[in-house]
Image (tube, rainbow, N blue to C red; front, top):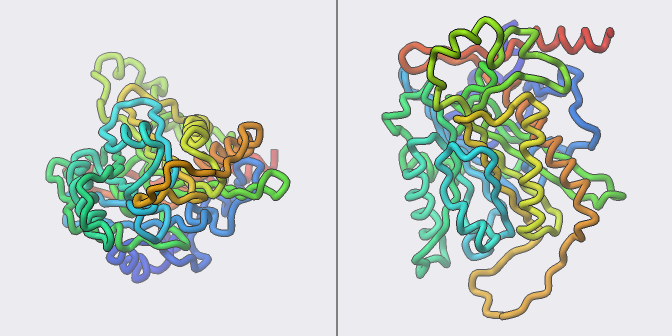
Length: 390
């Protein structure tokens, strides 16, 4: 049985998802990391094990696969289904390694809120996403007089498989990703901004996961979505998968060649989006965002010189109204002493999101005939089975 038939819905269903974008209804056929008997972390997941377990959060994809060279797309994440500019949410950003072209971060740092969809795409289409995102926000009912909007855009470089210099993502594609955003199951793998990405030497993609804290720890939900396009030494819940498959950074037979060859400036990036319903403001959202690299490290990532590792976090527990003229507000805030469980939830959800991106991704051939193989799932299954036997 092929990887596609084992890991995906039927080709017809997948084609419909690619054309329509957005979330894909689960039919029980889509494999994720837990289907291999691998259960990362200790905290329970939300019902969907996705960022959309956070009430209000929604995701949309626009996937571009055309001819032999276009392998790219857009992923949009919205904190709620209303007017995000008129009803902003608390937010924060964090930069791990800053080799990237993220946009809109400075105002989020300054004011501590999010007022636009979060748009993920490829490196050379950040400008397109920025312009189209602003047009979309200003076109929403009630925003007719808006003259400034801070659109948040993240990116990774998909130029190994995609004709990135062609800048094929259009304004129409940005609009389509935003308009298709919906709650519910989220399509993963070769979709949206993950269409042309690579991770740990395998095909990368979009992945998502969540954690639902027990009532004794507050009952809050943390959801994560990643655009995985980075390198390292792949480790899956402690399994040394990259070493077992002889595919990892600086493996012995490449040390001499690596010393002679200049480093690839496009050797990896990851965008991490964190959502929560916990009543936390921008300060503790930033503290959550700072924990995301710990989840990346669990998978074997190490934030290389050419890696852009960016994190965006928001809470849906509060709406910050644009038209509100009240000078003083009372806000409910989770105390610092009760944030540690959120930090652990963040680390675990980031880790599992990366695994889900790898498991969902399909092998792909793109520009100039370059190919990336998918993570060999049978090998992963055997490694997991061997650990259970041991």
